[in-house]
Image 1 (cartoon, helix red, strand yellow):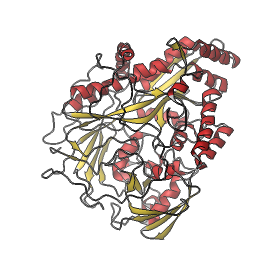
Image 2: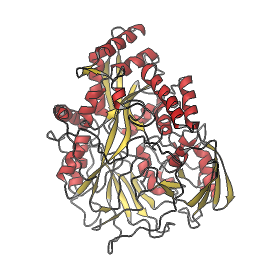
Image 3: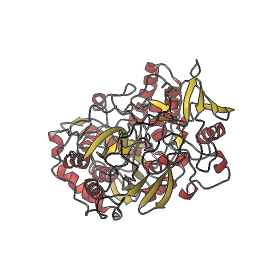
Image 4: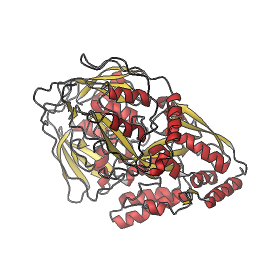
Length: 600
């Protein structure tokens, strides 16, 4: 969809507040780095000073209608699609090294241990998956071959036989073999090592075995539509067995050894990283670009100026621009660039359940009841987001937005937070021993809408519960390190549907080893429900299990106070050809299929 503009009168009332929040965000982190000149024909080598967030942005009323709904679940296991032949490229268009945006430095370069989009974006062009979400379409269930040219599925839906491309090889010249695949899959499900997203295949995965050098058989515990979708994400890369078995530290960029369309040639943690074309790539004709230069731009004003000046041609899956800023960028660059939208990001506040007073479930439930979600949706997303129930609202397996709006914690009265919910939240705090509230810290990385959400939340917690929360703004990598080490009380984040299946939401947010559950919170009945639903083939029965799970997290206990399911706006210059905004931030990030016309 091109430069879509959606409007709601109510949202316009909040634009001045949004402007103030944008100022807070721009002041909360390190100074932005000027974007160097990418090629001899690129725009000037400096980026104009960050522009203030626009105050006259028309506000949208609803999410775009031609984007797949977040969390849509396939009704059947995807079927095999052959790996693509080289797509046609415009005559006379040669290579180029496009400048692209990265929202933060990668946390590290070891994709299996990657808990964040930053390292997924950085590593995606270096490695291949066994299969992939088709970058030439907008259908999130359209799976095609990557390292595997094709595959067969057994009659009972439990076993897949994958046939690897005969020409696939690692950068050191060694062939990609079935041994690499078996080794990689077994490592992804390692119960001891951190596997925040690659490990989401653990539930259905049973085993794999080598049939011959280029054939591997993979067996699952039960038929699972989610299994192939997980294998198709950029987190489930196949890595070289012979390289990892040397004990090399894969978190360091200099130790990357992939099979992908691009090789890594340079990294500067403060500036960005650079790729070069893999001339020995096994897919004939791919990639089309001679390389890519990714520049780390944390400040939204700097990013907007760089897009307008054509110094940056493509935004990353996360780009630190708020919805009204993306909308305004689309207006300002009409004819030059395109804004597209994807859904599935669940913004919320997660809780360290190991530290007082949040080790008390009554305190956690009080937070769930007291948050007023509707103003957050209007202020921060300009009305585009959906209510933050545990699962994407309006999906077949959960509640609708209308149903959520009637529930305690989600309901309003005359446009205000429902007084009964505030009263009950205060009762819970008193029962927990905090009738007069307490002081705490809310940590927000300078990414996406996190700081804006945090500023509104601390005001609500103060007004409704007398909880005095200080916002601690941190750079992305430092913030992630703080969360992993337990150095936080409350934290802002976003996760959810990296594939269109509830298993993705559970694995990312609610499971005991989920990336956004760093304190390991677990409710026995909830864990039981999660396991039962993942194996249930009857859709109606699966829905019943998931509704019970949602009720527990909304009305009994939780470590994740969901705010809203938001839309993510992406920008690309119209010179970028064959680019389709991914339906999920975890797919289609290798860029082997895109080219420039005119030349980059």
